[in-house]
Amino acid sequence: MSAAERMITLLFGGTALLVFLFASAPPELPESDVDGRQQEATIPVSKIVAILAAENDIARSLYTSEIVGAGKAVGLQFSEHWQDEGIEAGPLPALFLRATATTVRELTPDLGLFLGSAFPIASSNLFSDSQLPAFRQIMETHEAVMFADESTGQFTAMYPDFASVDACVTCHNRHPDSPKSDWRIGDIMGATTWTYPRRQLSAPEAMQLITSLRSGFIRTYTEYLERAKGFSRPPVIGDRWPSDGDYCLPSADAFRMEFCKRAALQTSTALLNMFDATE
Image (cartoon, rainbow, N blue to C red; front, side, top):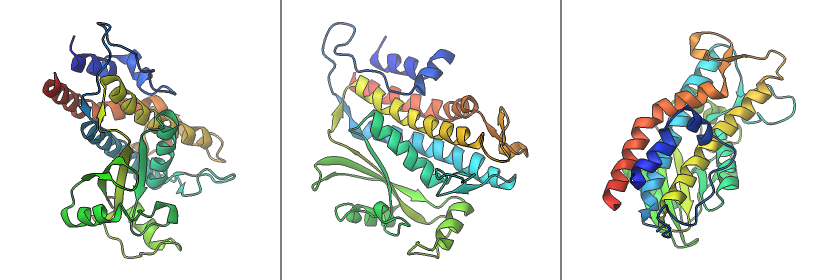
């Protein structure tokens, strides 16, 4: 079995492995491959980051449209203060990404994930001087930018973050700390920014990055579910979605399975193409 086929099997190879994908920690890196030879770092990190960015877009779109957008329509609340005591709300999409990034950093310290902006609500999300030129380029081209950050020595990839739903635009336009109040649907509000210290990875290292990100998605969503169980009016948690018209939330398993269904073809195709080019 080729390296590509082994990775595809691990990522999409059956129900038991779907549990593995969202385990609390990524798999340990093996010291050698099946033939006893040391794994070589031959995969460009840019290709893996492209997969991570695509999966992040899928997860955020799923959460934004099917949980936040549809959830608001049935009475669910979402707030930037969702983790505070006494707040009965889920995370806004940007906060969903921030919590996911925290888990990614915990599981894979070398991989950085950051949602930056030139007009952030929180000053901690302001782009650094070395990132601003790349963001200006994104604003002109609407395309991702990848570069070696001279100030940090890290590979950096920045992907445009578009205002895709009314909830994001309304929140930013009305927030008292927002430096910009005329956002519109379709505007580039910032950039999802990934950093990594090396330009090449081995196949197990690539696997680790993907599973860390997926673990971040499900851990964040599970934290929301656990908090929702304690609401004064807890939503029903099960197989149904807010878009069904009920005051409910899908279970962690339902959220996981829907994500996997949406991501499977795109990710598996990208991995097969990538390994076909390196083997």
